[in-house]
Image (cartoon, rainbow, N blue to C red; front, side, top):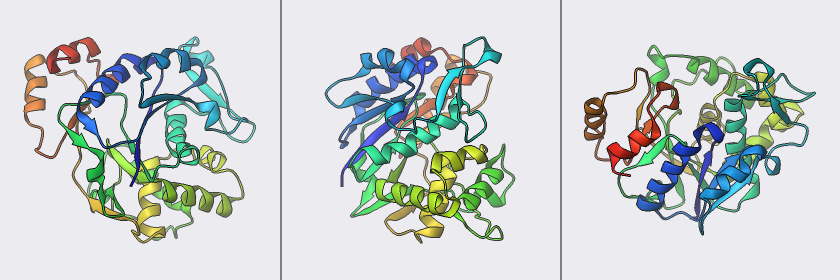
Length: 287
């Protein structure tokens, strides 16, 4: 089974993405190609990271032409905003999720393994281990939504159900959100088709109307509740140990964080908003 790797990124995360690429090249095997999915304005910058197995993809080749990007006037042009006559304005985090889904229509691999820009691989990882025969690993934290959860996860799960035409009374107890996850290409294509048939509009437009969504919740609920789990097997282990919250760790705390990785974890993630300098991360992990 062929598996590609994909990273949706932007100029503000370029140095983090460079570190991801370096550690991925050093530790990860078994994949066909690594796709960097970026806004048109960032294509030239990210081309520096291309090599024999890595290619930059312009979002104009992935998303509908009617979705246009402009400088955000409320950030003095530092951020971007996506406009369309069909939906309310979208932010970068919305569009990055859409790029990840849209890639399925442009490649012929059996699956896509997603690695965020703020990930650094520290241990060997063979992408082929994501498969059991023809079944792909689906990250699922069983019954996690039955416990108190932070943020909008319950809303994201409910909105995923609405997008997929699932009876609102059927509330999923499972959480599918994580870093380093894999999705089947054929499931992504049929998922988008289902959304379009149900809502009589392009799937990007439908998701854009909802605005409060998680692509992980949409795919997870589709795989389990529409496909009945066909083509997947469940695993609740996070392959990446993520440092989620500010303040940034001290050097001692960072080293302890790495030392406490579980045996099955192969990478770490340092959320960009907690303020850890990428050069400092390089120094601490030996890159």
